[in-house]
Structure formats: C-alpha cells, structure tokens
Image 1 (cartoon, one colour):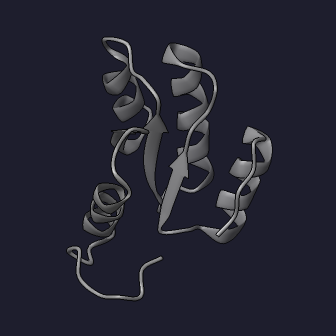
Image 2 (cartoon, one colour; image 1 turned 90 degrees about the vertical axis):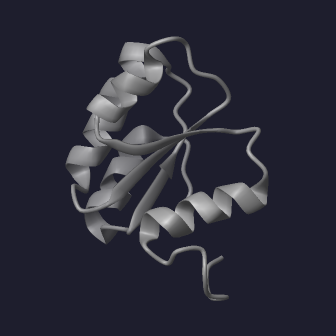
Length: 100
C-alpha cells in the first residue's frame, strides 16, 4: 500500500509494484484528469484502476473509463460500500476478513 499526492510518483509506484487495485484521485478533472488516469493505467496495465472523486461533470465518467478506469466512485460513498466495490473488483466477492 502506498499513498502520494504526486502523479509522477504514483505512476512510478504502480509500475514498480503492479498492485491489484489502484485507487486514485487527482485534483485535475475532465480531459486533463483522464490523461493522468490513462498514464497511470499505462504504467501498470495489469492493475485495476478505480477513480475516486468528489464529483463528476457530465461525460467525465466516460472519459475515465476510456482512459482505463474499471470503476468511478464518488467520495461520499460509505466505507462499507467502498470496501464492497473493491472486493467485487478484486474478485473476492465481498467475502473474507483479510481485506483492509
């Protein structure tokens, strides 16, 4: 697990570690945000990319999906629901106690 506010460092970490899931929230939105998400996905193509954002303008979700995002989630999502989404994406079906 890693955390950074720097997209360059995030892409480097993703490339080096190839995590199962990348949970990303860049300050840039729309087309510029989509470019950063595409770059992140190219850095670690085997990873599932999840966009976590406080809001999405009309069309943003499609931009993010086209950039390689597996899911686009809003930050207001309850923690339990976020964990369920990540488990479902990771193929654990929401079961098991070893997911943090």
